[in-house]
Amino acid sequence: MNAAAMTESQFTLAELAAGEQLFLRPWKFIKGVVGLETLPVDGRPEIALAGRSNVGKSSLINALVRNGNLARTSNTPGRTQELNFFAPADDSLYLVDMPGYGFARAPKEKVEAWTALVRAYLGGRPRLRRVFLLIDSRHGLKPPDLEIMGMLDTAAVSYQIVLTKADKPPPRALAEFAAATEKALAHHPAAFPSVLVTSSEKGTGIAELRAAVAAIAAE
Ligand code: GDP
Image (cartoon, rainbow, N blue to C red; front, side, top):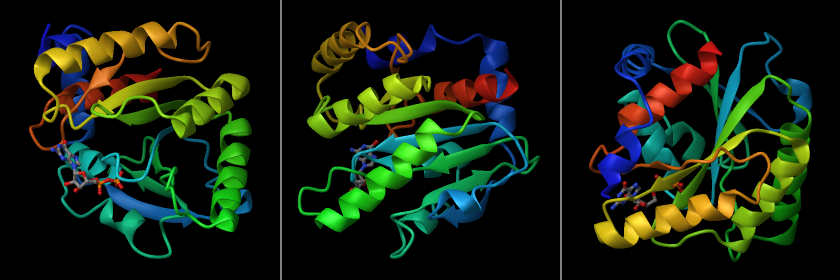
């Protein structure tokens, strides 16, 4: 099974078209949030993206919205420790870019601040419909990923693993890794059973991720 086959079968043509439609018009940066008191209060559905620093989260957001610059906003100094909110032109939902975690040399205070914000957000946000948890397809699940998966399981927040940089490993290794990850997910009650395989560089799985976002927003 190759990477394309792994993702293609999960969506109907109508779902892919809805995803295409949602991301056709320009997306905009709404705001960066450092404390729960400044979270948006308008009640629209939210879908968050989380992952270790350097997993390819900015590249994936830019690929989704077809804008090479949008997620740079979240990567500018001062914004990397915020929950950054993006919205489509029709204001139907928020995509939330969560601060990257797992920097080996991050100062202790920074890690604690990150953990407090993320725990509070994940544990107390009913309108959060799903978290896409990005995992580098060469590296697999690491302790910081398992920690956030535990947090999501405890908070009963639905999450789905998105493998990034799928152009890097050989196809066979990628397929084996995707299968092993799906097997491991059976032990995580809040995890979506299938993974999405993506490459921002090659465009693999981007249409499928757009379809997933549109389907969740429309639920
Ligand atoms: P972030 O820290 O999670 O926002 O990660 P970035 O999007 O900044 O990407 C980190 C590094 O991975 C950069 O050097 C990117 O060029 C590279 N990268 C991101 N996505 C891909 C991909 O799909 N394929 C490959 N080969 N490299 C990627």
